[in-house]
Length: 101
Image (cartoon, rainbow, N blue to C red; front, side, top):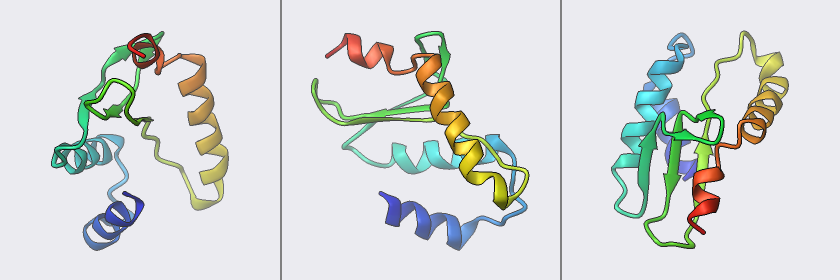
């Protein structure tokens, strides 16, 4: 998945396309093309809603949660990524998936 996204992002998107909504729609469209995953956008779960929830159609399949943020500069990427992980944890975005097994 990483290779596919890198190829699409580096081949089509400019650094100046910095709006979160732009990336949200782009990723939603990319993931929705796969028959192996179900994509939910802005789905309420836990104490909030994640930008994207991508899961396998199988009960105990793989899933991942995507929360999109745009950093002010490249030096803040790691710090901002840590904040996003904390947000996903604190707002329990995976609650719906855990309840379903």
